[in-house]
Image (cartoon, rainbow, N blue to C red; front, side):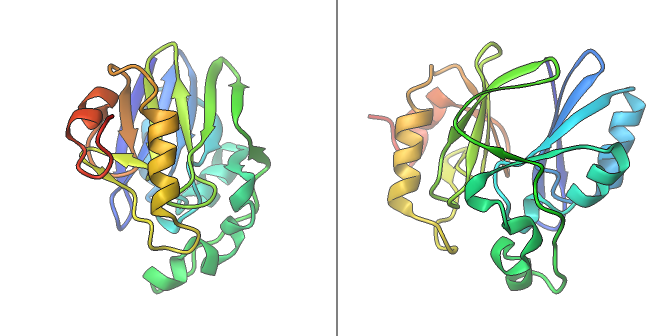
Length: 208
């Protein structure tokens, strides 16, 4: 399994391209669609879907272009099913001078196992940063795409509409910290880390 990280858009949001052989999944394409297209074409990959950890504007900026270019379906948690088409909900009107909006997702994510093409992984609902935040867990390969839930020595902000510090801490403790320490975390911003490192060093949610 291969993982390519790209820092995209105004806020440097991490987009991840997870691929094996020729098949690929695109996670959180926050902007600069041309960079994603260039990487996929250079590596002769065939994208299978776009998956979103949540629908804040900085994670969805390239969705429209990539969905159209590769004819892809988009997956998003049902709690944020309307956010892609509503700039006020995805907060683009509050943080930028232009609206970010696209068509609704083709598929609504729910907690449980998900298989797309040759990929099998688990979807965990991890609200707190936003009501529909999810984390994608690849148990066979021991890594997590956590969006804006858990960062290296940090956590996602909870002061936006639908955010909750109490809920975020509970999501991390109950769903992420219960994984083995050697799981690698690929966050929505910043560098990768591990479950063990965050349990030892994260000042916001220390391990028990």
